[in-house]
Length: 202
Image 1 (tube, one colour):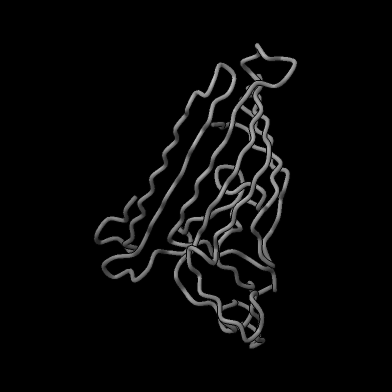
Image 2: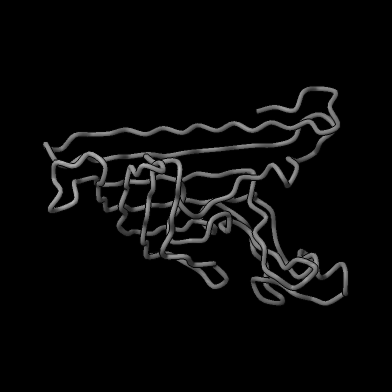
């Protein structure tokens, strides 16, 4: 995706998503998948607009974390924690797919065990002056602790989880239910162990 030269905003994003399926036996299939993304500004736009940032967490990313909450965080003007997302992202997933016991011949329901890992980062440094509330009330507030400096890097923002999922090809469309346990989490992360998706599946 690219903002054309001469536009008010000149930026680009590059993403690649890849998924492989490996039949292990008649009933078991291993799925490996991953996605990478990078974006930046060019010309008169110095950096990628914040509303085009990548976000992570939830189904299709790192399950067990609330959707769109991975990456660097700040306080908004109301004192709520928000995620800025980032101009770089990377996530991988491994999932073992198999039939649900008792309905082995059904093609509409399957179980899986999975492990997810991913990171969203922007390379910036966050400190006491980074939160929006600092500019509206002159209060010093920092999600990472007052007096603390946080460098948003791949390693610092990396999270991973594991769990189980059920996929049902219902008459209303594909549905996926997952329950994940965050293995690597940090203070301030928004956890959502049970998650549900309607309309897409993999």
